[in-house]
Length: 262
Image (cartoon, rainbow, N blue to C red; front, side, top):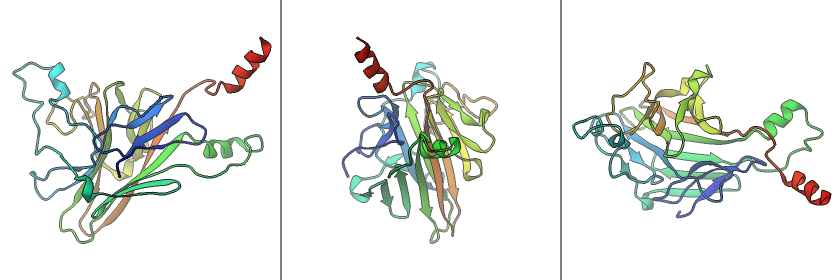
């Protein structure tokens, strides 16, 4: 249970890293180690406002909200809107690592990550469309809950807290996806029809009210997507984790040519 795993697209020096309890991970490109992002994965019962989020232990608890850097000592928006999220005990989590999959299960809740696995045809023989599909710089994940025995709806959450780069909402550029990106380098998204609501804030689990007309706080360093499973239902929601870097990325061949020239 106690180890990080790195899930990477084929041929990309990029990965989604998670798995070590109490440690950060997340999306990273061209790094020598794991990324340094809080990963928010969890669920809560909606039967009561006092129901706390039950979270996978893939984030670091903050002593205070990031709003302290933007507000005075008299501001109250950084207070929690409800009970503080609770980290799930490690001994309650079942983890299984496969050849191309990584899964965590707690009761009726599950989260899975899938890495591309296997051989591809030669890029020289592929059509442009075949190459795009084979080497798409994405890692796929899925969040699910079996609520067939429940009497109340359950909400599921996935998101990141990133201290380095600001988030931007993908809905500005896409009509069928909803999610967040860090510049143009990396991000996460789900189908618009699957997402119940989303939030970007200085503290996504706080009660901050600094929002624009879309209900987002664009200075916020935390962003999440929330899914809903009604009582009597079992649902599984796919999540795409994507990377992008323009220009010539792999320089090995270029380096060999330079070496031969000199």
